[in-house]
Image (cartoon, rainbow, N blue to C red; front, side, top):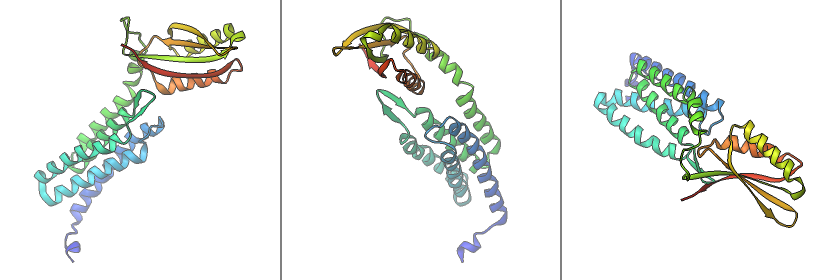
Length: 238
């Protein structure tokens, strides 16, 4: 019977508004992530935002502002475990940091909605979307600029294995694909690879690359009849 006694229509309406705001705003953040086919997409961000809103709203009802502040602290630390799950290390590259940060901010938006800070939740959503969209071309432009130092921490190399008789044509193909992807090579080396094949190593001038773009680049090169195999790999140098 205690559950029935706890029903309060005004409180339920307030909860409905909070959860609806968390659902919609988390959905906006998640839609951008889903559109870019990231690990944590629409449903994940909505669930994170709504979950945070539920916890904070419940704390508001049971313990007041002081209890809500305590729950927010637990949400902030607890979401870190979820974020860590989407961070991956693949072929020397760390991926998923931005996705983890987006989940963290989705929780913050949901916590604001749960605390009835709807205007703050909307502002938070706008800033998260701005960080994930408006800053993207700026980051890409900066990452593609070669460093002004002789040696760099990470060197990205595109490897192409081809028949020795096709060396000139493969050189032209590789140069065209690198230019098309806006990844100029700072150095190109050729090594013998067996009796009849060669290995071309194209060291990229940029030290920070988009793994998905390089994956697409080597895939295009691999489809050529001139190429036996193509792949890329980051290399750490002193």
